[in-house]
Length: 377
Ligand SMILES: [Zn+2]
Image 1 (cartoon, rainbow, N blue to C red):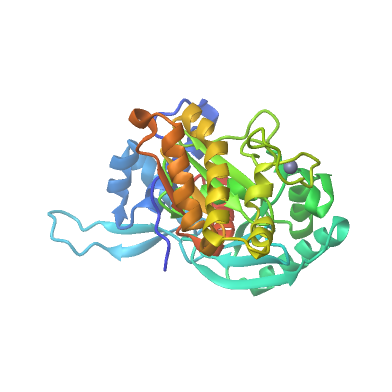
Image 2: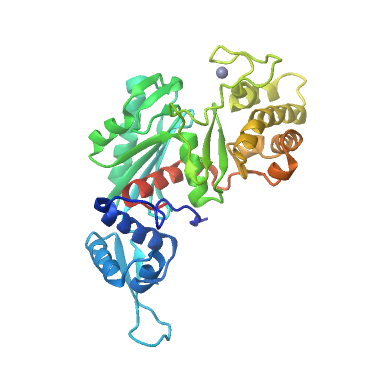
């Protein structure tokens, strides 16, 4: 299935800007309108972004020189006057590299076109790798991907577990033994290409917004070896005071204790939901599958009800193994949310699994590159 674009205006007409930024702002507006709608002429773009025909022709001419925009030919409709030339963003003329560090045993990567269509995949063994060895594995995965690219690489996006700041420094990723690791700068120096590194759940939230059906006020919860979430409020991804917004995995749920967590506390949300924990509880002697899944779903509902309430979210999306998360667990979470929030304001909340499957992180990495390099999303 080819994901389709929806939503998302990284750059909005009418936003307040300084005069010196006007040209790059206008350029991003042109690219954004061509990215979101196919079959536009220069006149259509001028109308859509609210700039003069002359300004648009000038910008488009530069973009054609850079090969970012192409002319598809003359429109065949029967309008009066000179037939218009149809433009498009050069969707297949550039490659985006996406890297997903969120799996246990493998680092996964993909080459994509500007639509997020996956053209090639690579993976490298990563089980048990920490510190410099883990960084080396990322470098070698990147080298293998770039060697396969048949078009110029627009940029590289990486989704990593842990707390990641706005400069792509991993402040803390305990599973890799990384702290204050400037991964973005390391990979940019290694490849000489634009690189963006962000938290995996935040990256997944970007994918859901652009390629899924993600709404303006949503939370994406990523469940794997651990648990994290990405928050979007009013269409804007939330970073938080110390880049750790959405880090709900080590928030204790309830006052009744629970299993000991790797962080030293008892009953963290992760101890209820992380896949290895969930699998262990399902495998325990005498365990009833539905009871175990319902219990975990209830804990998730208890943990996120105040977040849904405080932010008045429209949607909560789960990403992870759907055979575990999708059935009993999801409906138990929904039931718990219903009983703990205000029906009038939170009753329309949509709770669902993502439709993007296991490519969600590499797709989100593509969104980061599109936004960072072209101003489109
Ligand atoms: Zn914990």
